[in-house]
Amino acid sequence: MSTCSSLSPEVLRLDAGKEAERIEASIRELVFRQLKRKGAVVGVSGGIDSAVVTALCTRALGKERVVALFTPEADSSPESLRLGRLLAESLGVRSALEDISSILKAARCYERRDESIRKAVPEYGDGYKSKIVLPGLGEANQYALFSIIVQSPAGDTRRVRLTPPAYLGIVAATNFKQRTRKMMEYHYADLLQYAVAGTPNRLEYDQGFFVKNGDGAADFKPIAHLYKSQVYQLAAYLGVPEEIQRRPPTTDTYSLEQSQEEFYFSLPLDKMDLCLYGWNHGIPAAALTSSLGMEEEQVQRMYGIIESKRAAARYLRSAPLLVQKVEGIADTQFAGE
Amino acid sequence: MFDESTIAHQVREFIMSNFLYGQERLLLDTDSFLGEGIVDSTGVLQLVAFLEETYGIAVPDEDLTPENLDSINSVSAYLCRKTNVLVGDAAVSGAATRGNV
Image 1 (cartoon, each protein chain N blue to C red):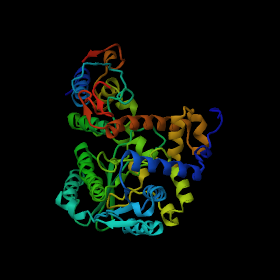
Image 2 (image 1 turned 45 degrees about the horizontal axis):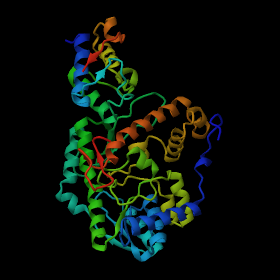
Image 3 (image 1 turned 180 degrees about the horizontal axis):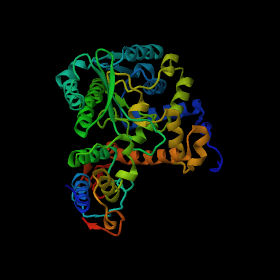
Image 4 (image 1 turned 45 degrees about the vertical axis):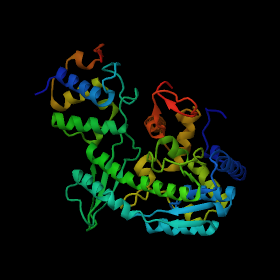
């Protein structure tokens, strides 16, 4: 491909049938032979990624060897559970429902979060809703700092830039959600001698859009190499219910509806896909401007943001580090590496 | 009241103690915080909070740019403008004001 011409989204087109077959063979190899587990547990969110992973596991391992786990909590949209159930029914897999709200309350997840929000918005209390957001990629070359949007019980909203203690406190509290979900997934994995399937796509895996030891933890991650638009192609091929395919990606973590774009990526996911592809393949920013409808300078800035987030995500992906290699134990990371 | 050399020194101290953890490395006054991997996006949030609290200024969204915040020199120059401190050549020109840290 010439790097002088315009980069088309068609570069992300894949042969969905072949790719599904390849991933399914890999899942069988990983689960049965390498991990030596009898099946797979998938945390099902009602979104496209977990739907595709569940469908692939079902085709690879058999529907009797897959459990779809629903873990709603107080801030979850009811749609998430409804769509999760729709998926499990369409695939014919077993499912389990674990409402994690009481665990989160016991850990003071909501209290800790609200205490941190009050550092930025003192009046925040009962009946208020909130989400944290990043500004979109604007015209000016500005750093993107997190703000909180709060909605009062009367419906008024306001946006306040977060201080470090407020931001870190909110994130540390809400991360209980992903970690509690993972704890539940491993509970079922232990019960059934199954492996836990992770559901990140390439954007999430590369850019660190996950919680360490939360949704970032898994025994295998079968779609971590796929761009988001490729996940949609597989979803269509696999016959994932239309409603799930049409649902806009959401974090489903905060009490106000929050898109992944405003929480993390600063760009719509199809544009983010193309930027990441361009950066990975050394394609000049100028070749992306017409496909993205962006200025060359903006694409160049996105390249910088991608590299910066990738660097920050190294900590998130890192396994525990050792001082030295431990004899007889392979696959360890140590300080000398 | 702050003078330009005090500001540059304080910014350097902040970066060293919060992001470099006493590592034995050379930090140039012109080194890009983000480009060198010294500060990430949460670090920028912390830097802005430090500037607002220490110097009693407000950093509006339109000032959140690399031109203002991406090196010791750029932060010092920005602060000097915000606090109306007269700026001398040595403080902001990047004239080899290295600190072996």
